Image 1 (cartoon, rainbow, N blue to C red):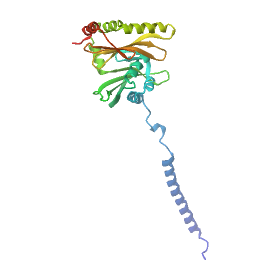
Image 2 (cartoon, rainbow, N blue to C red):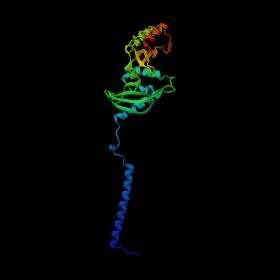
Image 3 (tube, helix red, strand yellow):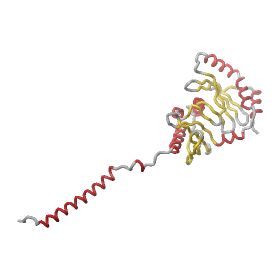
Image 4 (cartoon, rainbow, N blue to C red):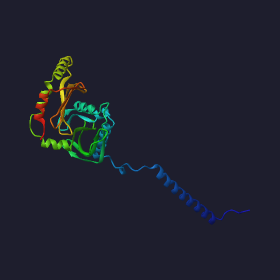
Length: 274
């Protein structure tokens, strides 16, 4: 039978137990630190304005690619510099919905990085995009300018691309657009529809006749829409396009309308680019 521990042995045993407890505590504390303590908030890089702009560009491109007109509409400011022309948001969306209609095969993707720099009214983003029908066009350098809304969100205040910017610099002065407008407005189908619409609008003081464009086309021509501005949207009734070679096509309520040969010749003389 063992006797009581000596005083020295008891001290040694107690010291050993304390050391073991300290060692156990150190292991537990280390594991707890790893498992439960997240990085300090200051260690997480904050989202910058440039990051927000890049995300907005990607969201815009995705909405176009998916034909999500509702998402697109929420991204634009009330007034937009749209490929060289200042128009309303409803006018922009009329053009977008026309391009993204039920039979449209339009798709878009961004190639490479999005560069962002400060602009007088906010932020300017430049990037390379591919867009078009089933076979996308070659890469084009596009540009979106963003401004902050009263609520702090980013809204597109300008949409353009390098080909448009170059054409704006080289566009000669002349009366091509006014000649085309005169020929189109003289068409009996256009006159009849617009007169009927104008009469109907007398019942609605919050609506007015108006137009969209001229919107620049990739070939150097332009497109114009005529229709009705409503408080929440724009309804185009007439569209006409003049190509860089002076050829014109006109649709009234979605149906092609014949332009007399004399009118075609007049437009071609005024609009054909050498």
